[in-house]
Image 1 (cartoon, rainbow, N blue to C red):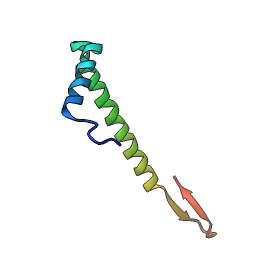
Image 2 (cartoon, helix red, strand yellow):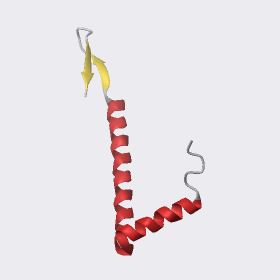
Image 3 (cartoon, rainbow, N blue to C red):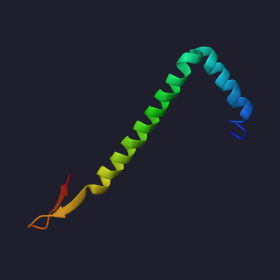
Length: 69
């Protein structure tokens, strides 16, 4: 279904359209913003998985399970 979706010619056309729409001065800023957004998303996912991994169940004196957060 998606075979050959991102061939070099397709990428050049997408780049040309982006250059036309945003202009040569805004394009680097747009790329930087997208890169920072992806980086923040990855860090958020990494932090969430660390939080879930460090949450542990602990038994109190009565033997009941207590969730430590």
